[in-house]
Length: 72
Image 1 (cartoon, rainbow, N blue to C red):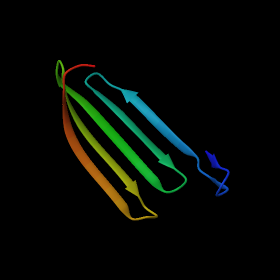
Image 2: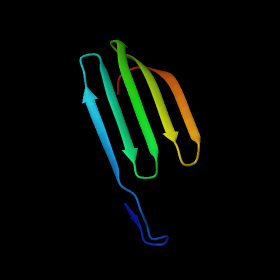
Image 3: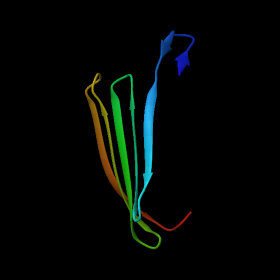
Image 4: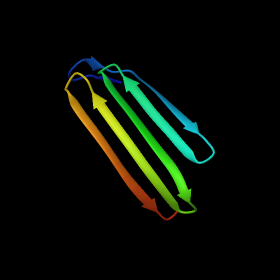
């Protein structure tokens, strides 16, 4: 991605794996940011979510978990 105002460019690479009971996503970019997201199906309509984002240059670390109830 290119920002014309600041003349800054960023590239990122991501992945998305669908397994039998979970989905794993992630990305890494040229700004030193790494992110991962795991969504696991516990029962029909109940999902457990883990997520993490690490920005090495800014020293910003975010971790989280959650539960999703219901289907979209």
